[in-house]
Image 1 (cartoon, rainbow, N blue to C red):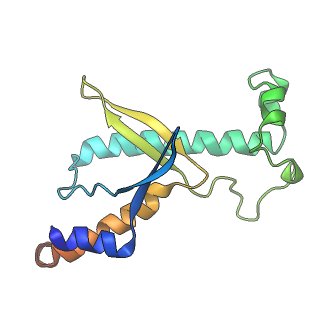
Image 2 (spheres, helix red, strand yellow):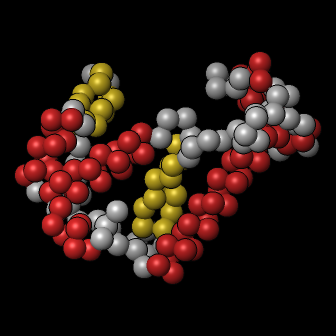
Length: 153
């Protein structure tokens, strides 16, 4: 796995941690052995994540569209209006793609009871997508023979 670690250092892949002292860079903790999830279990997890992403899309479409959630008192108008993330200039504008949400990432964790939980959502700049790509490049270099034999793409 030294080749994978060397690639990550050469590529400048670091994890930035923010604390009271400021920002600190730490080496990216590459998991050499992937987490394997049973196909049926992943189908259930995946369906739940798609449902969650669809909910986010519907909320955004309403906030920038008819505002039914605010009218019904489900979302407080002040919460939306005061948010620095709310883009007032695009209220009433439907994106050409038809979608407000273009990328979403979910942080998952398994509870002590074995059930999966969503620990966090990333909709602005899901850095995990970049780390996933770098993980794939690094492990492909370290395990090129195995990846070739197993037809991993």
